[in-house]
Length: 283
Image 1: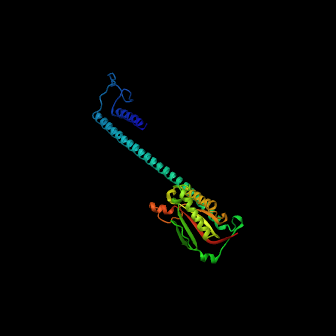
Image 2 (image 1 turned 135 degrees about the vertical axis):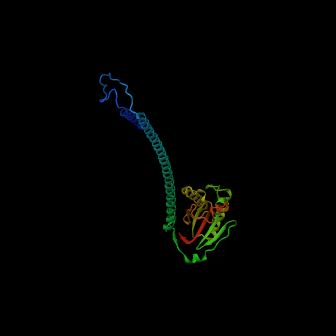
Image 3 (image 1 turned 90 degrees about the horizontal axis):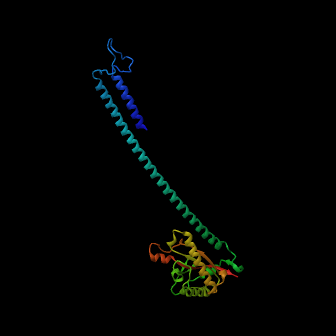
């Protein structure tokens, strides 16, 4: 549209210049026949008229060329601006996607934390257990707690509690709560040791795992919940430990014993801990 208007203007200017360069014309008000001679529509141009017109045409052509350059530069700037806008839009879309993923992870973590807090509160706040038993502290029992020996298991004193550590890989199929055949034997030995040495102590079954499910904290806690409940069920049904004596706690990946950077460390972190507390349970 700009170039069409410019061309029209140039034509008009050229016509004006041509008319201005002529001293006489067939349609001019000053054109008149000399006395005694017929008027002629073809009059000779004034000297130097063609040179003026040529100069004006050159000037107009130069202006048109400059306008073409300006027009091309504007189109180039518009293309660059559009490219910049598209790049900014892509960055905004990427940031929105990242924010959505972070919000989802945060929500999963909050759900998992709420589940753990609920379990911890249930253990700590319950002073009354099934069957009407009451948990009481006993200083003499606290002082007399000692570690037992179970072949193949790590048993250690941790402050005032005894921890019987069982590798999950010895109890369950990988990544599941399905007990292996050898797992039944190990839990039978643990139940027998508890009956011999800790008949009145409070027992908590803690289940831990590695960071293989770190992308989904809810799944990690769900796995350790299922494993802790499976151990609880075997200790009660096969080991015949009193239900009121036991509690379960799913720890997910929150309490590793070793670095998860190596396969050995991961295996160390996948474990079930039978934790014997000094508190006694009196029926």
